[in-house]
Length: 353
Image (cartoon, rainbow, N blue to C red; front, side, top):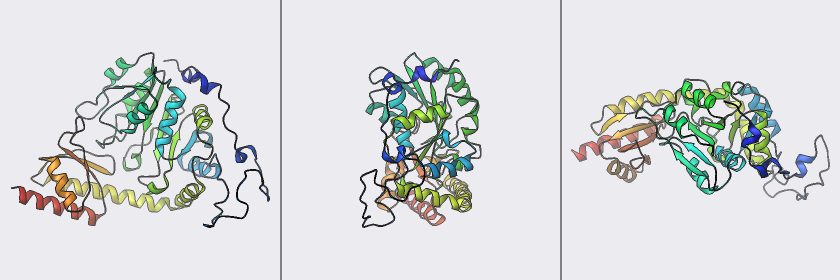
């Protein structure tokens, strides 16, 4: 495989002169800022919100780089990892001509972003044990294939993809392989970030929305070579992550020990919930999970889903998803929430018998 990054980039992006914001043009320290047409009198909300945020999130990237063992130049910070997904389409895929490969059942935003950007999608279904069908994926690659999306741990199945399979695809494909690791903190294997130095066509997505409990601020990450990150920064909106969101994550990073304790608690509850669900008559199978949720095959997914709604408990009905027929996706909650779910499930089983 010969990887040539510039040959993959859309011609208009290669020649694009990115927007230059006031805050990106000035570097250094100053006391009077009269360059960005902000409200000099302040904000009724306070907190310095009258000022534009750092467009490149330098302080936040420095903190993340130290935690992840990469250079700040290898990090993109976005409005959720969904922004990174969309920007990758904009950079590499010509509308109406290029295509990507996805491996359903998987995260639905890959397809949505493809449709928005008028990019074709080749779907190579996972195997029946929810692993990558490597020969089929490699056979599906064409001259128009620019991106391959792999979700690991996968949503909605919950399992890690074989690391060897991911690396084989990356080595054999001369386009971009995107590994979405939104749930990697709940897995026992290390992140694919460790492979970046050997795989220049790899992009790894992560998020603060899951283990870090920051879903409300919408901050996602992309890790890649500095050359790929430079392209993403070239096409992103100038102030894509608010100052409030940046500061919230910076403050949260001081709580890494607390987050690690939450992860341990979630994994313990995942095991307890799995063992309890297996014992219910209405449950046919609980699939192994490396995430903070369980995919559960039940007797009547639609009926159980509706019953839980009536009990004021919301889970995700995956009955209409290929390979997930008859399944519910259940997030691991607190011990009290899990007990309420189990009690309602027992009541349904009694009423249905």
